[in-house]
Image (tube, rainbow, N blue to C red):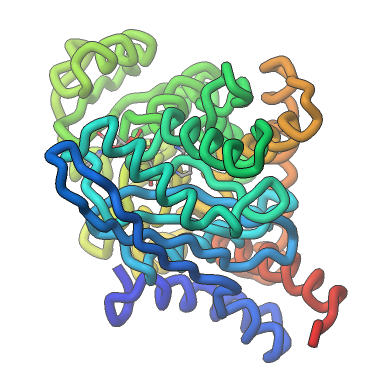
Amino acid sequence: MAAGGSIFNAMLQEFDGAARLLGLDPGIWKILTNPKRQIAVSCPVQMDNGEIEVFTGYRVQYNITLGPAKGGIRYHPDVTLDEVTALAAWMTWKCAVAHVPFGGGKGGVICDPTRMSRRELEALTRRYIAEIIDAIGPDKDVPAPDVNTNDQIMAWVMDTYSMHVGHTSTAVVTGKPIEMGGSLGRREATGRGVMIVTREAAKYVGFDIKGATVAVQGFGNVGSVSADLLAGIGAKIVAVTDWKGGVYNAAGLDIARMLDFAKGHKTIDGFPGGEPIDNEQLFTMDVDVLVPAALENQITLENAPAIRAKVVAEGANGPTTPEAHRHLHERGIFVIPDILANAGGVSTSYFEWVQNRHGYFWEEEEVNRRLEAKMCEAFRDVLDTSVRYRTDMRTAAYIVAINRVATVTRMRGMYA
Ligand code: NAD
């Protein structure tokens, strides 16, 4: 993905552009471009065949100036410390843009969960958490689900931590099952945030979201909820793709039926409500809004020149390469960057943590009302900054984030 193959270097490139425009003090610059803590642990697990495997796990607390570190735990064979550090840095900027009192963290374990039994996954999760137990906690570092981890794994994280401290601690992790302290509205939160910022972007760019045409890549948690909620405010979802295929219907796809179809078939490929299409067709479609909500590096210099959307709302993390982003910006396409567009997830994780700490749970409408306010505030802050600095929305989002973390770093002063 990045120069020299380092994802962390890619993060630094984005950081540097914004920090230069902001005129960031060189000392603060140094602090904000170095991870505060990087923990590496070995996790021995007795596998079902009786043999012992040792898995390497990481937890990075990139910056905790604004509050406890916040970020998911990823289980994947390709996890590296470089990747986990970059993801932890991005969480720092995302939390700051969303204006939630969290720093940025991320965890990863090198493993292939598709080849592990439920018992092995539980044993690995409990051992990994036991190995990093002193570093996490409601005031220290609050993990969440990420690639290949889910609410069941968060339940094991919560239980392991609680057993160690001797009491039930719900606020140590977010993305838990509702029954044990998860927040209503969390599952839909990222897609809801995408819907809100897309609606706000349409107002700014100057078209009516009612009747606007939308193409969505990915029909998982983020893509399907974004499509459903955008359709709910009157947009016409004309194209959707997933890992297997895609569907197009100029009159608008029936998203409720598509959700049912996807539940049964585990893909939208073959959905009877439209004609088949692939990703490349999706990207080049004459639509008002394009929502990449699948993977990183999907919009590249190869396909960016053919993109005709007025607004690109980055539901996924890192869907656009830096060169492609420059190209889109130069052509006047309004890109809502990932650290803003998909910040609804971490905002509602914050709400989950707040509810856990209060021991008082909100109705779903309350969660959604607060998310609406948070996303609108974040969108306005980034838009105002982009106008003030005459720059694109991504650089502006970084400026907002860096400025917030830098201001508090300066106020807190140097502990020596
Ligand atoms: P998911 O696993 O639920 O869904 C991913 C979707 O992408 C699936 O529909 C899959 O079929 C599709 N996909 C995979 N490969 C594809 C391909 N080559 N072409 C087209 N579609 C493809 O994941 P998710 O939770 O929806 O996350 C999607 C993105 O959003 C990721 O980048 C993730 O990091 C980011 N994100 C998610 C959240 C969240 O709360 N879930 C929050 C912030 C960011």
